[in-house]
Picture 1 (tube, rainbow, N blue to C red):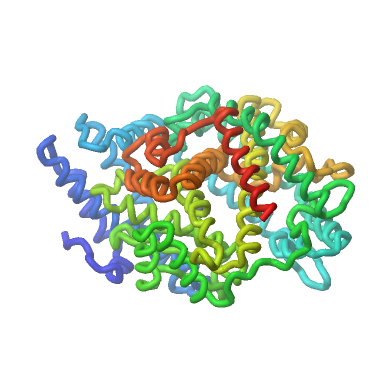
Picture 2: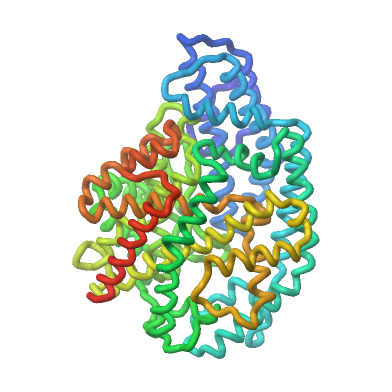
Length: 566
Ligand SMILES: [Zn+2]
């Protein structure tokens, strides 16, 4: 058995025949309470390398989608290394569980491992593969949706700039063209839906679960909250957020000077101002971000500068780059990597703040000794990123280290807080709809019942926008939300995390330094603490109730009013 690679470059050419003996060695070794930490350290060293190899190969396919070699190497990894490594990792987790040992700061990781092992059924493996294939079919249907617009063939997302057109009739025409095209796939998506549902019921039955919701709960390792908590959260949103959202829609309606707000009136600036343009080159973006992070906390500033210095920020929009933005990690090198497609808009700066929150989380948790302690669920990972967006907000103005005039900084902060408030009701629709689907499986097998259920939830949460005459478009909203089809139930995480983030922000309004210090301590816990403990460490409550939500929505509304008056 050769020794482990120490250099990221040699990692990239690793083969399964070189990796497998290391897994076999770990699987064959015996350990006791006295030397389990040595075994865990060796497992971590191997896991870090396989994970970094995966990340680096994947990153290479996104920074240049035309790089055929990168694509081939990534596919070879997925075909020849990934399945073996996954199976070997599972074997090691089960070996640790079977030992009955409870190493220090492993309580939460062990709880997750037990939940995974308990849910595991060999009979479900082909079904899970089948589910992934159906998810790809959904991608194919959506990916093929294009619209003829002014002699050009545009995808649905390429139509989005048209929704910023100041001419209302043009916006309406664009919106209708896009939704008509989406409606043309109504039956194709319904057919796919009727394949997804029985497959998911079978997964649950094989694992001895009463329904797919119970299966999915455990599969997503939701160990700290229940379906009842999520339903309480939906009700809390209805009581505490929906009235605030209506007030925001009404403010927009008045600013636009229209009788009713229509779905194509939601993205333009309601005061007709030109978009904010904080930078023209990504080097400026790096300078602005560095300046802001140094003011939030000198340690975060240093982390950011390290990433800039070591070329771990790929920010500019170039031909051949994959769309979107993400933060990933290189665990052997103990470094994060940020990818985005900046074109000079405020959204890009906002994305930079968000992804940097994830990156700082990586720096902090990578200090934990074992990789099994560093796995953090989305519910808290998004607290890290969303909080950073809010913690950075006071420094957007040029006088405070950022780049904007006082008026523009206020505008950016207002838009951000409004977006946060308006997100919760939509999240509640997506969540409530799915709770209904997987507890009414016979009815949900008929897509027309799903349309009706979506309409019920839409009317309950989304008041303030006039959809009259657009019933088919409204009722099929569930067709357009990819999470519902590809990653069921995965969405409430963002709503829960946002409630955590606004609490961190509220703390910062009265004590910025104290709030930031708690936030950093929480990030450093990685995955060694439960969600209520992580939230508490960050100075927040892991909450689902209307009282908590109302308290923070009030504060957000008051802050918006104050900024509006500036
Ligand atoms: Zn994120």
